[in-house]
Length: 523
RNA sequence: GCCCCCAUCGUCUAGUGGCCUAGGAUACCGGCUUUUCAUGCCGGCGACAGGGGUUCGAGUCCCCUUGGGGGUGCCA
Image (cartoon, rainbow, N blue to C red; front, side, top):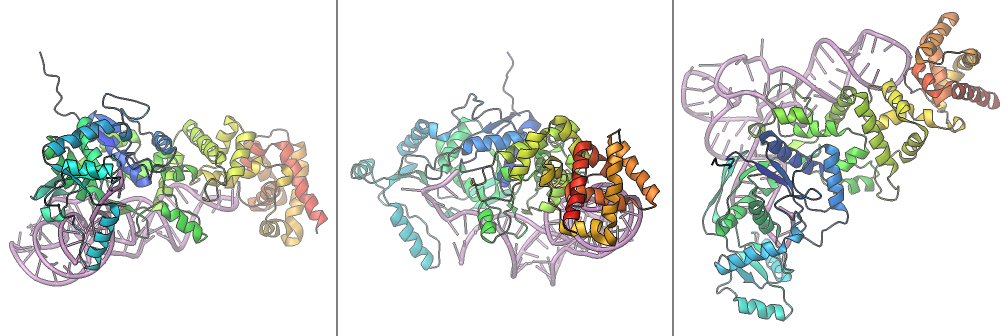
């Protein structure tokens, strides 16, 4: 019989805490883990770390799952998928943690501690005043189990602390190399809270073992946690997975990208920056460009290539090309990536993404969140008044746009009621009123032509406009611009032939008429 | 304060001792294309944090300084 043990087997995980939407930095962590798994043909596990009941946010698991799906990152085991190592919610694994807590207690590698949070806070404040950092002093003698139970009966909530070994610990890191930390840097950490829940450190170590995680790829903010985890693994007889600590992503200002940036910007009256994956979705980005962009934040292929689909990333990715330096999140460059991707994907894909964008935006309740200025009304209107064929044409006509809101800005007027068109005074002055109303004169000529024109295709209309130019011995601008203003209220629109074809003959004529009449009413 | 990590154009980065008068992308500036807004194309500006070593030779190796970041929770 052959051994079926695969020595190369790879299992990685992403373990978010359900406190809101998926953060863009978290998205990069997922992506890299996902890539490691897919590259190796291993498993990608999703685990929900909901051990802090005070920070739990309703619906956030669903939100995170949605964000992952939108990005195209699937998981082999986890919520809604199941798997052989479940449950995948830590709050449903309490018995498991208790069992290992017992083991550590029995083997004298952990003990009950009776200080209250208030006492610890006071001690910390005192240590800070003294200019140093607080180190928890292991009690001597240690509280007995009987004492802990008595305290609990008394209404106290004893915690369990892990005895950190008195020896240096070396973290072998696939990204940073070896990092050795001296024992003085650690005190005995709490592994079970007063409410009986495990702390992050403990649950994480137990689950990584039980879920057979082979590689842990996480943010650099976890580097100093890793020695603690290694010490616990040793005490419990667990294996130590391979570790890799990735650089952190910052704002252009150098501050850490955080959800609070949004509130700050709103307070200052500025548009809030996109921070969570969902922000980018609502801002009209393609998941392709987000994935591509964050992949290049800390990883590169070693050559000049910059465009990568998920499949191409899977092919090209390798851990040894992950960098060590923190990166700033350059939204300008992301925008450029998005422009490229919008031009690159198939019309079908672009239509699907645009429809998703409109749907997501239309579903936002303005009172939900004092977020950015989302074109909610416009999105609803477009959804109601168009179909797939129309949207495909609109997207084609707007080719070259950066993000989906640009499409709405450029072609949104198509979906307005004719009498809802608002004329931009500047545009009116520049292209219609100027030169003794030459623009209006042109509109009068065009109106007659439009009424008798039969072939209402973009090409034919384009030809009609060009022909008018020749007749009047003038440039395109003198003909196209007045039409633009009449039909859209401003000077921005797709090519003039496409614009009119998309709008239709009836509406074109109605809008031109209305524009001329408005002028007569207020000369 | 203590511990740890990091350091190339504004930003993301290539660079693994001679291919480097440092390459690409983005941003910015200029030009071309053009019926508006974009796109596209061409060109330009722009960096090895500083100081010591090692070496025939250093962006690349070592040390110090400086700067940035992380940790120091009954958060994850």
